[in-house]
Image (cartoon, rainbow over all chains, first blue to last red; front, side, top):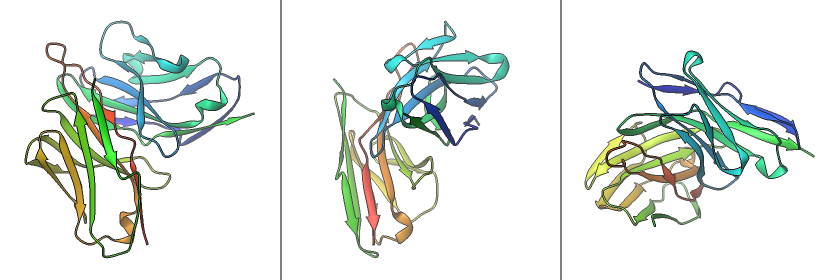
Length: 113
Length: 116
């Protein structure tokens, strides 16, 4: 069965600094990969997703993620973090034509002024 | 456009009382529906999912149950709440796109349940 690991439980960065959140997946086939963001007390919002094609995916709010098959990774990046980016971030993995997704445990992002 | 409604937003219930959380989806047909729970500071735990009316799969044994009486309605229930049922409950839906096999989950805004 597919699984996804987010190694970092909590990350703190300064406002304006770059950000990279790690995500590793485990599955034999090419998975579908997603990043979601959750603000406190809110539901999850889709940031971006990868199904096929260009391995560098652009999302909303200035985020991007790169699919690296050789490393089984789908890390989320942002060149300059804003205070409003403080939230919980979830990576998720699914299968082609099977919308049964599995979520990582999440990474909580704190942004220092 | 598709929308998902989840209510109530917050709920405080005494131990031993019943529970009913409702989730409805608009603008789509035959979606997969999901109930997740987040305990404080923890990730998402899939509780139930449904691929059709009356079809419920349970991921973990617990004090909760789910029902899908209509195509776009998903209900989470309990006969007697426990303190450990406190958490943030999220409903979600997904539909496979014809041809591409692509999809994504759309989440409701959640219900904060506190059992006292």
